[in-house]
Image (cartoon, rainbow, N blue to C red):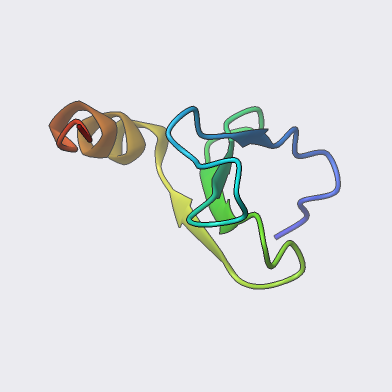
Length: 63
């Protein structure tokens, strides 16, 4: 998968202390990709846009 055009954005729920940080790119055709911001060359998870929307809609809010 060519991710060279991915525009990554960090989750608003990620901490600023270098802890659990997730980045998402939703600008690629037909796919939403997710990665660990501490391992930018590491693996990514790829979701169909509908599956990603369903995941986000059902993910619990963090207090």
